[in-house]
Image 1 (cartoon, rainbow, N blue to C red):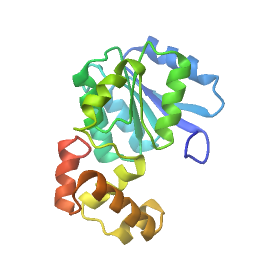
Image 2 (cartoon, rainbow, N blue to C red):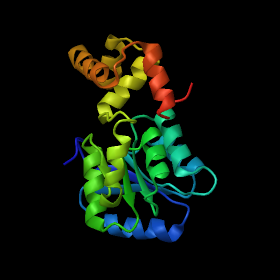
Image 3 (cartoon, one colour):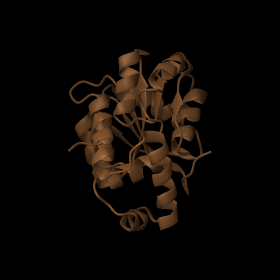
Length: 211
């Protein structure tokens, strides 16, 4: 299940056309998915996000030029509403850790069956996270290092970190002030901090935004 009102609109980002074509073919038959674009580079992906932000970007970690980690970091800073699901050939701990710190909500190996990729898309678009079974054991090691936040908590954190008031956040996200207060309480519980400066430090340290 996902928390979006309509079909999931996604963009495939990979510097190999064969990979993009293969992914598009695998996803095209799924009724609730809409592949609205493809990008062969980080710069192309950022341009697409600026013109028409998708719900989700499927991003290759190891692209040449701006790699997937750098792209995810840029998206987190410029378009925090765009969810990121990483695709990779590697289950290396550092890749996974860097992806999470950059704001990715999921990490799936390219060799994964279509069903698993679909499960990952649904989980990420439902406000959760998803990691391939091959890298799930790494998450136990990462859990103490990287705060596990929901999609909405990420959005609220970034707005708080940049000095927005509860009232302004409620207006920007089209939610109630009480809901913002609930998310803020959850962030305080998970992160142990509440001030804008402390939240900004955490966001920068984890690659969720830049100064």
